[in-house]
Image (tube, rainbow over all chains, first blue to last red; front, side):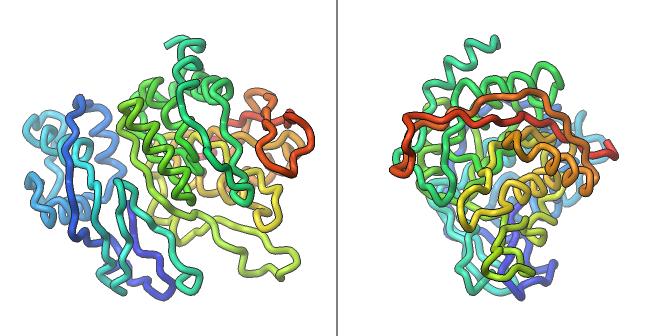
Length: 118
Length: 226
């Protein structure tokens, strides 16, 4: 969901997804809702999620969405864990294009830029 | 959940400690938040199991209301770290998995001269967020403070970009015709669901009266293509 928007940094292949670094993760168990996950699958950028999850060393998600995800129980469990249960409490997100760093503090990413960067 | 029960829970939501006038931080009352989200949930089925966003979430009142009515996931965006800190405390207290992002969805309108400075939506930022949620519920700044001109419309523009289904928003009743026309120019149709009184308590030094009621409309917008 979050991409670099520094002025002049507009190579779409590099400005998204941001690379997570020095992260502290916590897992909060929540109830799995398959309808919600199916809805989310239509709205997220799968490649970005897959790449980010792999970089974080989380449950390995397949490179493409299975043909019939709703009936793939193991896949839905993994997806729930990565999307709904993993919280990043501290860390930073770095743009692969311009190197701008967006900090994450107490679970809240800060996407604000200084005036000269807008 | 019944409306009264929802409002009762929402009264436990903590609001701004030191509201900032330049961000037009007026808390959404439990009374209003309950009615907005209850209507969205029960009259239009826009909340339960849905992906919801709250733009200018402040202390998280509307997002928490959405969770209490069964939202699948809620993301709250706000520019102010202090407000987000309170929102985070509310989220922990209510044990709802709401995500918060500190972000500015507006920027100064580049065509303006200084004298008429106004804000517009940051389209570049919104492009990737396009159609990432089902429903937006928000109580945007009304754009009545110097430097904030146009911010209500910038928020509406952003909300219409994010939502695939519907946008619920509060706007001053005095701007009704303008809002309807503006939404239409963006390919959306707006409907006024209710006229409400927004009770602005005496929070700032420049407030002379103890509290002032502002007449506001609760709108529901949807894209014409839906």
